[in-house]
Amino acid sequence: MLTAPQDQVPLLFIEVDNCHETAEELAAKLEKYARFFRRRVKDTDGQERPMWCTRWTVPEHEYGEAPHPPVLLVFNHIGERNPNRTIPRLRELTRHLWQGERMPEGYHSYDRRMPIVAVGLRSLREHGPEGPVFFRFGRDRPQSLLDAIGNPRLAAFLAREAEAARARQAEYQAQLREAAREQAAKKAVEAAREAAQREARRPSCTGCGARFTDERWEAAEETDWGRPVDTHPHLCDDCKAATVASAAPTPDRQEEHQEPLPEWARQEFMRFPRRPRCTECKAAFTDERWKAVERTGWHPLGQEKHPTLCETCAQEYEDSIKNAWPDSRPRVSTEEQPEPSPVPRPKSGGWFSRLRS
Image (cartoon, rainbow, N blue to C red; front, side, top):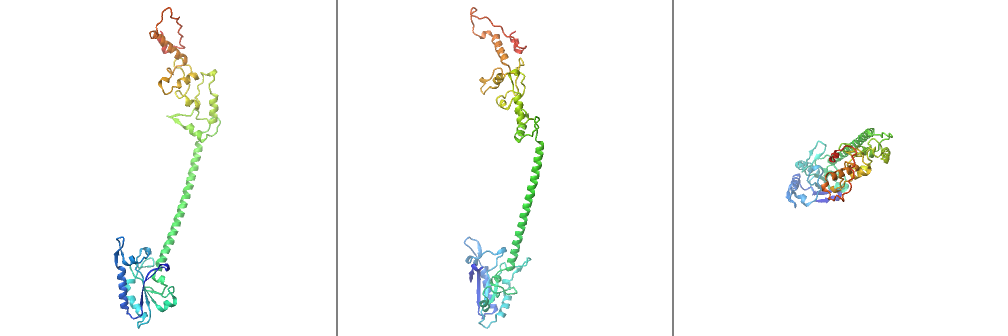
């Protein structure tokens, strides 16, 4: 028995014959080899395996085959037997041990078969293991030792399959790259078309005709419960600033100012989106009155008592309430009671003027 994995011979059984035994005797020996190879035992992991696999380490065969280890018959022509007549007879007697099955791909499968190789000692000494002097049963020409105990046609088939698989993988990768390029080009075209459509929808300033920036466009489209948040959604930032500055209230036209508040004022005054007017006299609120009625705070005590009245109407209302219920005020003597001041007349006939009548 020989193990030389460094020379690609993991396991090789060698039988030397000095040409004293007949072909039948050699066939009986090979039958014992086959019985030994078929014997199975439980391995250390509890799984059944061929017994020879538990004693010698052999790599798994390619393509799912499990052939038996090869047996090398070395004939030393010393006895009266002629190897040239013994080998053909022995080949016929052991055909069921070594004959493989031809596959459609052009190679033979030697699954659970025992490779039997014959060689003469004189030729082995002359050419060595690399010389084509080894005759494997079932083949028609001598080969080197590695080719004789191996399966060159299966190796060639596996090499062709691996090359075809690499070619298919390369073609598949090329198809993936081409599909990725087409997808990227399609996305680029779609993005350009969407960008062109978006630019076509981009609004222009009605004042100067300039296109809105992305920030200005987003601010102009924002709404609050269906109502536009921006005060000048059709103007750019510069034109909006100029319009707000020109429409700012002045002392001369305090009551005529009806333009929307600028953004900084909207953050401070949130009750009335436009300058309120008095519900009694219809006069526009001054800035001080507007701020007073808007800054209510979170506490109810800090709220303005009459947020819908101007300062004058609110004061008149308070005075009318005091005059309508005089007993609620502290009593004073007639000598000390001051001269009653005339009650100011309302600017217009309001609802609380009936309280004084």
